[in-house]
Length: 175
Image 1 (cartoon, helix red, strand yellow):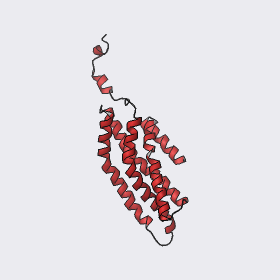
Image 2 (tube, helix red, strand yellow):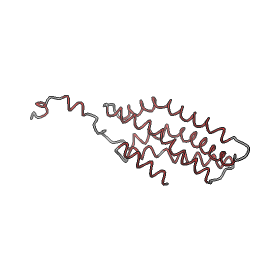
Image 3 (tube, helix red, strand yellow):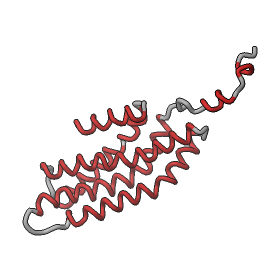
Image 4 (cartoon, one colour):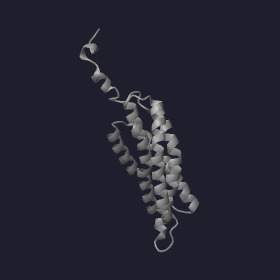
């Protein structure tokens, strides 16, 4: 819970908003569900090692939401409509999201399938990351854009600063 709170505060400072971090953090329960179900299916338990994997998973899965929300905000600041910005950001950020997931899942698979001395600890961390990243990513690419469209601010601060600066002062004060 402390890790979630800390990440939320960091994201709130980064985005200067409480809504965007909330949208991003909605991906965490999805990945946690995937991780815990994978532990149950593989006969794992919730112990210190699997909890380390869960904390790692929180940071990894929030990265997906950050990629989508940050790029959507940039597009909206350029004047793109919210729906169009979400569609474009989701499409353009899908490849990096899938590459990150693929790298983490394939990197954690040897941990999950390990045998030998000390493998009990590595197996727990491995399955948490494999299950959480796989299931979390599958749902995050749908949930984050949907929630962003529901909770998005109507106007991004600074979206039309360039337009206001380009207008001559005389046209701004006309009655």
